[in-house]
Image 1 (cartoon, rainbow, N blue to C red):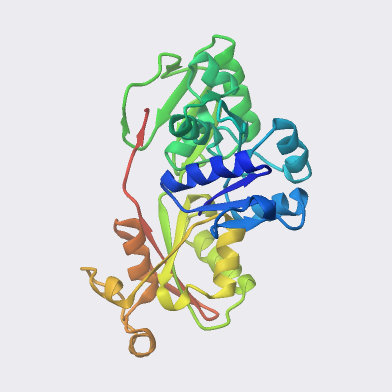
Image 2: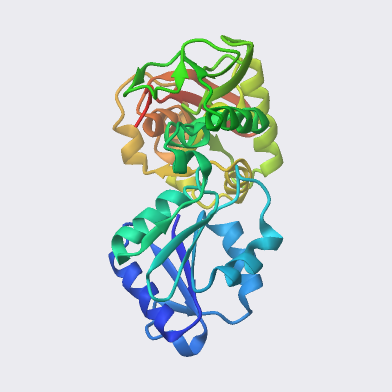
Length: 340
């Protein structure tokens, strides 16, 4: 997903172009038409409010080059939830300050501000409390380790306890690397547990962080609806003891990269979608289900199983399940968690 940058003056447009020329991922630049000095800059024709609404729907990283007040007024109608809001950073036209404005941890705005500051020489302005105090931040830990937070209210209580100087428990059923922060202990009234089991409660009040380690491989007939995919995926997960929070991505063959129902499902669930060529899927070693019909149509014996394994880089944990024109399979990305 690309970084979207909007600027409002000639000076801001030039700064945006300079950022884009060295950025690590694709950049979309927008500015009033008279300040678009090259073909890669798109004219800002409908005003900042419609642009912001579009940006919130289509990207996860937004940069305003201008005043903080402009950005605040523009994003105010569209701010919903820290778990889904995009990262928003404001960079002044002189490139002096990079302000993390929205979704500092879960959205990645703090790190985006630091990256912009490193490139432009600006001072990163980060106001999240745990960062300022140098403490463990449960939401940042979850983002870095691909963990789903099950209770945002309890996550806030944990942050508040740490800021009050209290120690918080930590336990994990996954391997843990890195140095554990001093403010985390093995016991306590309030704690964090990394587990796939919602029933595991190592502390009286436990915040469960669910590992997002399952790649969902999908095959489907042409024209399948989002509703059909929703129903099949939810049913298969429930029947086999898995849940939606464990999914880290959706994977299929390139033939399905424009399948609207599938893309809509991924967008609604906030899951990245990966597609692979038939040659890439056939190159995988291992035993997979076989369908002569699927082989004739796609060139691959079993799309969903091979796509799941290709995306996860780990073993198949649930073989091909076929329902209502949709086939699904699950593969596990085998990796622990780390304190960085």
